[in-house]
Length: 154
Image (cartoon, rainbow, N blue to C red):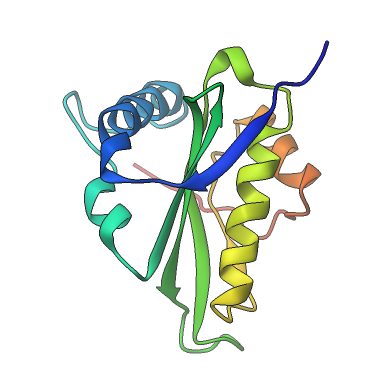
């Protein structure tokens, strides 16, 4: 199989309708992992605000001028006892199911890592559901390591 030519670029407000659809696909995919997600309609992010925020980086991957993947990096304040004051937090990681397994998510992560490094972040984090094994495998493949497990009790 020949890999398509992929263009990674900063998202614009013109991309918003596609990105809002990606957000709903993420929510649909994560519902089986989290019984505490409210009933529809919900939204995780204010994507439009993030696109316009100079302290955030929202990127998309295009194949033949079609947006097929997304991700963001934002600054988050670290807990006071850690050796860094802020870190880059990655989220909104989505790849259209027809384009999975082609390394596009890795390209998105690389772009966000570069942005994070340029902004001076020494730490990059993300969260993933413990049962989401394909996502965990993809993140481990690009260098992430399991760090902490959050547990809950009803």
